[in-house]
Amino acid sequence: MSQVKIQSALISVFYKDNLAPIIELLKANGVTIYSTGGTQKFIEEQGAEVVPVEDLTSYPSIFGGRVKTLHPKVFGGILHRRDNDGDLGQAKEFEIPSIDLVIVDLYPFEETVASGAPEQDIIEKIDIGGISLIRAAAKNFKDVLIVSSREQYSAVELLLKEKNGSTDLADRRKFAAEAFDISSHYDSAIFNYFNEEEGLTKFKVSERQGKQLRYGENPHQEGHFYGPMDELFDQLNGKELSYNNLVDIDAAVCLIEEFDASENAFAILKHTNACGVAIGSDVKDAYLKAFAADTVSAFGGVLVSNQAINMAAAEELNKLFFEVLIAPSFDADALELLKGKKNRILLVKKQNLSAKKQYKSLLNGVIVQDRDLVTDQAADFKTVTKKEVTDAQKRALVFASKVCKHTKSNTIILATENQMLASGVGQTSRVDALKQAIEKAKSFNFELKGAVMASDAFFPFPDCVEIAHGEGIEAVIQPGGSIKDELSINYCDENDMAMVFTGTRHFKH
Image (cartoon, one colour):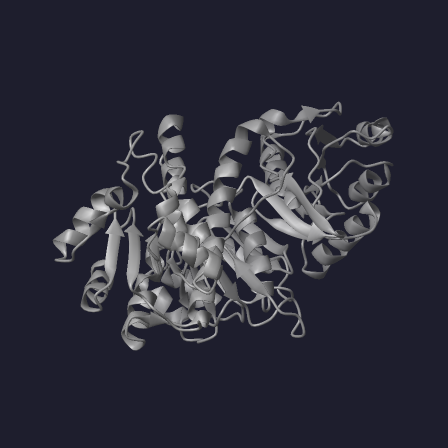
């Protein structure tokens, strides 16, 4: 039977908003409605007759509502096969009615966890009857339509109107797929709640919001984004975000969150690496300093500020072709100016990243790790040379370390206390990374005498401090940990350089 005329429905929902139009349609089509508790009362308030589930099962709701619908007359009404003579005979024998439509949602488990409620309240929001009804109706989609979320009410209303209270097999199969999406997501959320304490080495991630991208990393690759992007950003202008935009935006946001809101920080990124980072007296000053570090790579980059974009900054930014600009807000006149380029993506960042884990697919599986949430601070420094770092150098080393942490390994960052001068990124040797950084700094006319150097990992040999000293660099920050640390330390001592260890490596592969 491809087309099924709905003659009976079971309705038991937590959320009742926008349910009334469906009740009206069911009533108009003479559908028998079974229901329980608060849902029953709501349906009756809409002027529809209701058969209480208790009358069907001859059992009341028991155990504080934990058991209401878990009964053979309910599940038999959903699960019996309408084209199976044996099932039909048993349904008749045990006076089990056919149920053609099930409208059930689930207790708000995730919302209760997010609210900080005590564990007992959270446990009570683990739905048993609802999840069982959803699975049963979805399994028997050949005969039954399952509506498993209030998000589907408008679609169901339209379906009932267009098909005069009937459904086709394609309709029922589609809603069944959505039901299993909802049930699997729900179970994943419950498992992950328990696993925060248990720490089982299992991997379960479920994102119900998905969006197809124009393409993946390259035009011949398909791409999707899964997650609640609108919780993080409001897009005020520009084209749809691409796969590469999203990768760069992630890198930009992670970097800018290293800086305190009291600092006017600005960064320009290209292919996930910063080509300019600075702290300024205001947004315009910070942008100009960041831009100065690499006026070539900034073209087509992703820009990010931790301060509102005002008109003075916007006038400078408007001179540059860039893909994306992220900020906590935009002044009205600045926004109007920047929106002059229709494809320019402008994003308002509404909150900080909250994820504590990172994961990606590789080989035939997935790797998971904690996010690197360690930010090197001056209090963490261990001076390993005879010469101490000055207060200004401490500030410069902290700044350089923040940038270094978010740059592809092997990396070297050259900086002052408020400006990245140059970077060497993604090199196969640390010496090459340093040489690249020096060449870049010189090509943009930066004086390296008095600058500081940051490395994302230890120096296995003294060659990097030797090269740095030759360029006038006076202070170095690195994690330490090489069996030959003393070679670099001795060179610094012999050449009046200061060096601090942090004890924390910041590889970024």
